[in-house]
Length: 493
Image (cartoon, rainbow, N blue to C red; front, side):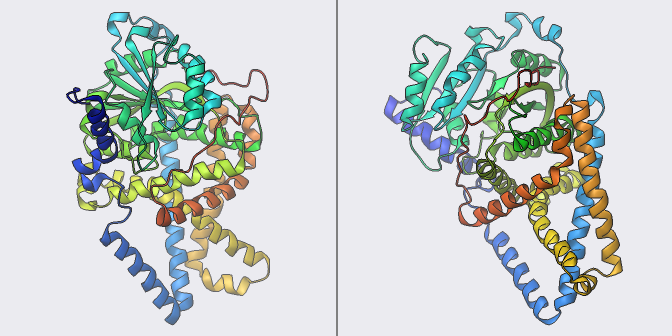
């Protein structure tokens, strides 16, 4: 980000300081280094106390109002999700660059490209990483790959050196990130930005297998899009969908999200919560925004909103990067709880100035941003409550349920239950059909079990937001394997 002017030791300290504190010093209100501002904390405490007092003096009326309010949120969220899905269905909802157009670009038309690959505790996937990067169709003299490793991560460092990084693999540079809290992926990426030389910067995780033509497709897409498009998000999918039912659910989930909901958001001009990998940025704009927030555990979602606040937009590209779906339930909960915590973290950061945000992105986008970033984890938590209420009815407490659900609450709640669940399953089925994934049909039909896991992860994430807001819970990779030959989805357009 700046030209080297200091001795190496001082320069390293300066880079590390910026990687950790750069965004906070540039705009303290944009940093998640403080989880709750005083007014946010006091408002939350006041709301809880008000509900508690009302529950003491007007117990049933209070619970009925809360159930009615939750029902209204459910209805608005599902109707908005259906609308977004409908907008994402047309073929032109997503940016497409065919192979012929991508391959027609000459070397002179291809800009320098920087690929950031943050990794921590992942020695088992370094070899796969080199194979994936080696398959990218891009001139090696214009492709800078920075493998960002923590300086005390000896197993991964040794594995990288054994694989030839720093020696025979000359287009990959191993960068050792000095130890500093928070120990997060965005901090490592910020540190790597000081060495970045590309006009375009992207992130790949160590286990990613990107479409070989993805960089070329991005260059072609940027040349055809308005200057206000600062980021292009590629689609993500998984190579081990058939490993077990959990990986099938995960693949189904991503197929709907990246295939239809993100393109629908793009067409609606609403902020796009970026994926954690395969997002390609114009480097000058990324630097001007202060890059990533090292205290935010979903730095991608946060940056997507920050782009929109500053008048930039994101396009979704039909080019697939294959990842490893978590096959282990405990590992999956660790990862998903971090995502849910980060969504709430990002929402809390951006509503610190609610009036300004309303003006910057507009009322509809403000509502949609709230439904996605705050609504997704909160609704997942509320599911546990409503499932318990339903179970109470089945176990013989109909009179109590009748008091909780008077007719003016009962019928909207019934509509929400039937239409919401049916619509979600239908959207998943439709996405699997359009993505040519008939192998995921059973995952679509059994998805309520997946929702239970999502609720557990969300509850954990909400708890951690209070206790450990910037703690990055490590997701272990290298557990996946393709269960059948020919399973892998083609990574291309």
